[in-house]
Image 1 (tube, rainbow, N blue to C red):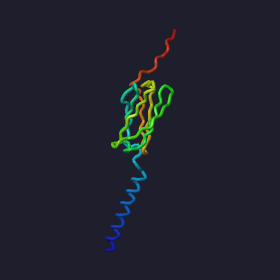
Image 2: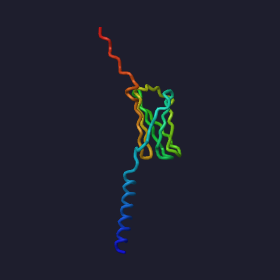
Image 3: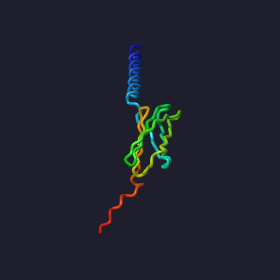
Image 4: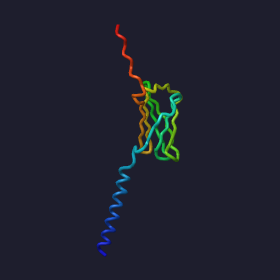
Length: 121
């Protein structure tokens, strides 16, 4: 009987430690994505954020930085539109933060041609 009680107590303690570890480690950034939907006007879509959270989306392009607040829906997705921003897709960086999650979008280098070297006389 004493062995059974100690075994049950050990099981309860282990379960408590696992749940505390999961809560402390959280799920920050796991699976959160930010994708480019459209270039003009700039439309970004966030996926896998927590539902009903305020999300701050910040875009940096052509030396300008602009931020928008939005809310994720019941599925954790959102869309952010930047209408007054002229976008150079090769110099576009964006990040979305909210609900303990972070997603980053950066233009892939392979999509942008290298800068041209000036012609030498």
